[in-house]
Image (cartoon, rainbow, N blue to C red):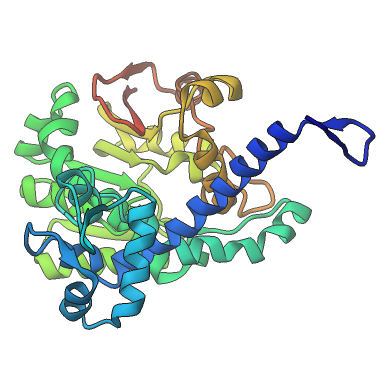
Length: 365
């Protein structure tokens, strides 16, 4: 088989060339199909497919959703070709039980539409990234707009609802009895307040405070609290109303936010200053290996993680000129432990909680 020569004068193997081209365009296929997943969620197509168990035609799905059949049919063809939905023959399509859990069941812990909800806002930052690569300065989460905050809320809520109160908090030594008796709690990086409100509902004798710098998220948090009528939950703009520094808190929680912070060490120092001598910090963050090589070898989603880091997490962590820039996979256990020790914590324990994305740590003064 003949071979060509590239501009450097090196022979190009035609079979490897075809394989590499396929690899590259498979990434484009994933990006385009991700856009179609966003549309399926936004237009209610997945939800409509779950209204009964029988396979559905494009005409029936279009009628059920009030959409144009020809567009619905092409969307169904994309989703079936991508193996995300089933093609059952005779022009009928369906969701497997697993697909329905991930794509349509907002109460299921595997529900995965949060990142797809905010996909347009996330990808829009491709227009701003050349400047960030040039200056080194990124952008914070409010730059993703209201829908960005809503997408993060949808990403986290299923786990919170299914596991925070029944699994996460009981894994901490002695914490649940204190919450039942009446404790002071802070959730740093609270986002739209899902965790705060769930804990406030479960432990009415305790006081819960959420802290965030995203105005969009805080607006959603306050609206959720008011809707639920929770008098024992409050939300604060962390830029102007920070954690108390008087060792008055029994529990502090942080969920997937330390790696996003411009000054994570300062945040850890503030958490330490806020906790009672016998208080507890529940640190939850992305499950990262110690080196890039380990992440590349052992994490099948490493390329996604590094890409999201540029589009969101590291961009936030570098949104100020002197930001730490940890990024999505920037807080492996060794670094988390070292930073906690630097902040004055003396006990650091990894919790036996199985999660595909996150690691859980109990940290104490």
